[in-house]
Amino acid sequence: MNEKSVMPRTLGLKESISMTVGTVVGVGLFTCGSAQIGKVGSWIILFTLGALLISIWPCLLYGEMSAALPCAGGTYNYAKRGLNRVFANLVGWHYIVAVVAIGAGETLAFSNYFKILFEQFHVNITWDSRIIAVILVTFFLILNFRGIELSGRAQTGFIFFFWACSIAWFCYMIPKIHLSYFGGMKMDSMPPFNEMMYIFGLIWWCYTGFETCASMGSETKYPQYTLPRALKISVFLVFICNALFQWFLCGLVPHSAYHILAVADAPYAEGLKAAGLVGFPIILLCIGIAFGGDLSTINPGIAAPARYIYTMAEDGSLPKWFCKVHPKHKTPYTAILTVGIINYVLIATGSINYIASVSLVSLAICYMIACLAYIGLKKNYPDMKRPYKAPAGKVGAVVTIILYIFMLIFADRMALLTAAIITVFAILYWAFFTRKHANKIPTVEEEVGVIAEPSPETKKKLDNSYRRWKIGTIIGMVVSLGIYIIPMVR
Image (cartoon, rainbow, N blue to C red; front, side, top):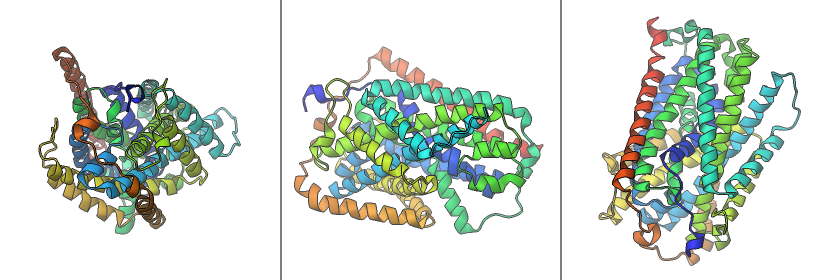
C-alpha cells in the first residue's frame, strides 16, 4: 500500500475512551437495559455489577492483543493470526452486524427521545421514527467520510456534552429522590431463573462494544500505551454511567409505574412522566440523552465496523473495492458507505429489542472467538512483543468463554437463529469466495509497521493523562457504588 492510502494515527487516549464509552453508553442503557428495572427494581445494581465483572477480563485480553497488534479490524486480525481465516471471516461478519446494529438501534432511540423532547414544548412530531433515524445515519456517514480526526473531535464533544448534561440532571433531580422507592433493596418476588438470565443478558449488552478502540488501532497514536489504558478505563466508566442513571430511575419512579418501565422504548422519559416529573426534568434529560449519549454511540457505530470491512477487503476476504481510501480525507469511504446501507436495512425493522438481541448474541460470539484467538496467539507467536500483558490471560480466556456460552443459552431464540444464519453465511462465503482469494498472512512487522516510542517528555504527558483518568474513574466507582448503600442504611 502506498503512503497516500495509509490512514494516519491521530487518536489519543481521550478520543479512544470517548469512542469506546460512546459506543457502549447509549441504546442499551437508555432503552431495553434500564427497562429491566420494571422487572427487578433496585436489584438492577447486582445485575449491572455482574455484567461488569464478566467484562473486565476480556477487556484486559483485548488490551494485550491490541497493544501487540495495533491494526484496523481488531478481532479479525487477532483471529486470523491466532486461529485461521475461517474464524477471522466469521468474527468479521458477526462484528459488523453487531456494531452496526448498536448504531441502528441508537438512531431509533434518538428518534424516540427526540419526539418526547418536543412534546414538552407542545410540538407533536408525527414523522415515523425510522425517517428521523435515516436522516441521522446520513449525517454521520458524511461526518465519518470527512476524516477520523474530525470524527474523533466530534465524538469527544458528544461524550463530554452528555456527561455535562448528566451531571446537571443529577444535581437537579437529587431533591426529588424518594429513598423509600428502593425498598431497602427488597422485593416481594423475583422473576424465574430463565427470565433473570435473559434480563442479565440485556444488562450485559449495556457493556458490549468495550473493545471499540481496538478496532481503530491503526489510527491510534502510541497504541502500545493508549489502547490498553483506554480499555481498562472505559469498562469502569461504562459501569459508572449505568449505575448512576439506574439509581436515579429507581429513586424517581414508584413501584406502581414499573409496568410502564418494563415495556417502554424510552424508559427514562416514560418513567419521569409516570412520576409526574414533566417539563424541565424531561427536557434536560432528553437533550443529554439524544444529543449526547445517542450521538456519541451512532458515530463510532459507523466508524468501527467500517474499519473491519476495510481490513477484510485489504486482506482478501472482501472485494478490494471495500478497502479504498479517499485520497483527501484518508478514510475508507466505500466501507463507510456499506455500513450506512446495513444501517438503513436494520432501521427498517423498527424494533429496538430485536436489534439489541441480535447485537448481544453476535458480540458474545465475537468475544468468545477473541478469547480463542488470544490462546492461539500465545501458542503461535510466543516471542511477539507484548507491551502489555493481561493477568492470568489464558485462564481468563477460558472462564470468559464458559460464562458467555452459559449466558447465550437464555438469549432470545430469534436472535440466536439470526446469529446461526450469519454464521452459515460467513462460512459459505469463506468457502466459495475468501478461500480462493486468501493471501499469505504478512509478518507482524509488515502489517503493523514501526510503532514509534514517545519521547521521555511525551511519555510523561501520556502517563499524567492516564493518571488523571484513573483517579477520576476510581472516584466515580466509589460514588456510584456508595449511593446504593444509602437506601439500605437510612
